[in-house]
Length: 263
Image 1 (cartoon, rainbow, N blue to C red):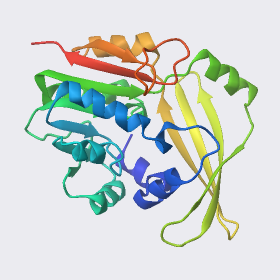
Image 2 (image 1 turned 120 degrees about the horizontal axis):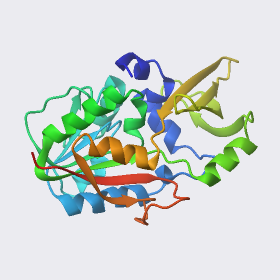
Image 3 (image 1 turned 90 degrees about the vertical axis):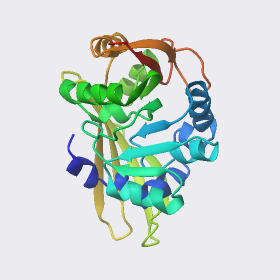
């Protein structure tokens, strides 16, 4: 992943992103409720201050953590997303950096990578660079908490049943132009590369149609545990959803709480 890959997507235009996620969705989503934010707050309570969020976007997680009394730093390499976050508050330290290379010269009790942030990095070298960077920035007893995509057997059944079916997703109002934009959803999976693509198709009132392709690298449960192990992390706990239930076969999420090995 390169910086330009995010900057060219409509989805990662900061104020469009917020308007899009605030609109009613055809599919159930945790991002329209409070349950996910409660989950992250509880995990951070177990770790303490300070907190670093990688891929903080427009502040959906960082800002509630700050409001709960934590000292929070948010890192993202999208200038547009951070600009939107800064409009909301200056009480979080917003930093524009690449997750693979940032150097804040300080350590954190908790580092969060919510909402599939790491899945946007498709190459093993990139993932290992991020893990090395996280290890450098963690206190000796600190925790790294990763939320990565998990596709259950139930997901795959539905995926194959609906293959080739483009579905209505949501309608939202463009925050700068006031246009109503209709969006549709398609999906693809590259089995060789383990890349799942979410395709968002934007239909503008003037007839213009634009597509975003959000590509996620899928790490299977034992695969990600092995990668973490050989990069100096042990997995302490696994959650399968934001209600804190344990990870299991048909969980909608795979959230791993990790400690780094002492050198």
